[in-house]
Length: 476
Image 1 (cartoon, one colour):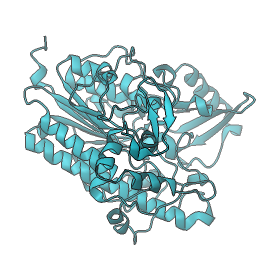
Image 2 (image 1 turned 90 degrees about the vertical axis):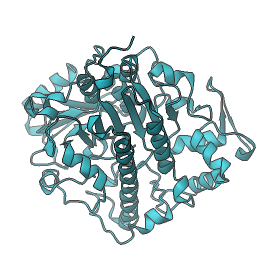
Image 3 (image 1 turned 180 degrees about the horizontal axis):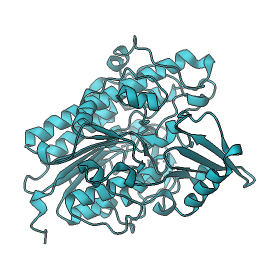
């Protein structure tokens, strides 16, 4: 039986794009100064609206800078070392509890759309985005549409994948039905091979995929816009007599840098700061990529505005928690690096903005937050419990102003075994521990107050600080 408090519990909208780095946000001048950068000419008015109503956490770290592990940590409320998804080659274990299940068992209708990556290696979405395992993970049937990310969608169109994981390359993809619902959508409109061929031509420059030419897809068929419409349909179909949860997993601003013609044209005259210690021979390609990255963020923001309008039309806006975050960042050429899966700021730090009923809004705080903290935050606001989420620390007290942000967490951690590194930070000092191919450990230490870009390794003269941070990392 659903308890009598169910109808008074808040709804939850979680906007979760893929690969949005934390410093590429419409931050105020003081936050940018602390990060050692100038304000960026981003256009994100709807996210700014959430920031004005809510709290912006300017120091949020992903528990692991890789898609499937980061999303497993979010689902479970566990850090990387305990979440049982060490790489993109692992499914989320169905015997491990999720906060989605906690909400559904308490009477929530639990929905979602876009790239979940909780079953990433399977590449099987049944053509509809719903498989029975989604129910085991905690989603409500009829309210969830899972699809592949940018690269996985192409694999679904060009390779036959059975539910048991058997794979066979297609000679002619058009003779077969793709198992990814987005690719099915494109095929029905005669656009699938245009999309497949566009990906194939995005060649690499100096080993880096910096092709910033626009896609041939029309705006309506662009994946994030398709995901947005799916999310809007789900919101409109939610029952009105029970609370709801919706997670919208946009596939942008993940590479490749494929934007539509309209998106491209809107940013052609905007210049961005160059990458930090990047490749000077790639300045123009880098500039084009940064324009496209901003265009993807603007498009996500436009969809965020549509979600806010849809929630208001339901009469639910005053009783809805709204969260904007991401799974991991993107180096964007800093230190001549691209992508994620490295221990530097661009890869490990992510956005986190939360607005909720009854909170003290319009604030920016630098508490040491990790994205799996959302689990206990959600259960606190809904009056529920998830005892197994041992690594999730609720942000409820910071949001309502009942506790000082300094009491939240003393250390934050990010790690990835497949790249042999661990990171721990106490907010001022950040220690990076890396293992080489021979198993030898190497250490780098940075004073983030004096060196926010993590340029100057001070490990040689701060052995006591390194020992202290290493001890807390081992105790994590």
